[in-house]
Image 1 (cartoon, rainbow, N blue to C red):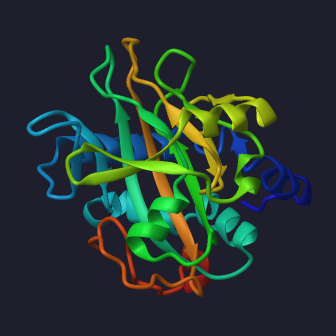
Image 2 (cartoon, rainbow, N blue to C red; image 1 turned 60 degrees about the vertical axis):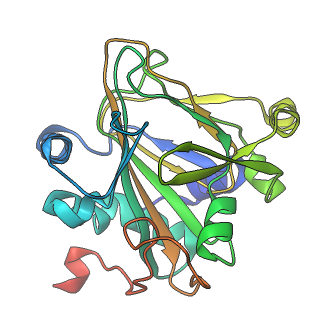
Length: 255
């Protein structure tokens, strides 16, 4: 799946691009089956809301689930990443974030992704991209991602460290910084049916609230990094920040 010149220009302008209907039918059913198997498994790589609490993030899903390993090399995810980053990429992160119904999962405060990767993993440049795959319908009711269009062009913004999740220290943006960004760019809600692909810049300001609806909301997040953008003295484990810089190829290219 190749992006058009217009779509790439829109991504560069806004910092995100929503592509509904990328996965449907049997392909979507296969992804949702993998989602259910990950949820049911006893895994060592998860983040939890609190000690003994519900899962906040299922990390490195592609290690345990062949369907998700295939998703990493799928044309629907890998091709846009290579187009936008302009070259070979490797997989930096794979996680699946749940939003349990009736407030069972908390939200994520306003933040940028890249500053944490720079601080904890030594990612020298923002030459990465997030590719999100909606595994459930995402509506205004079940905790969608909020994005501030154009905020990625402001670079790294002022943040403060918060350790609200066991094993995870987040860099949350100050209220003043967020208010300034929203005053300039507004807010959009990344909604769409299951099977939607959302690509967004790691420097875009974004957040999400808890899900107080009765509907689940699971999203797979694949983060690709340019192979030349190697980590310098990373501090986190491989299931969070991979240093395998082997270029990824589509299955058709390997054959």
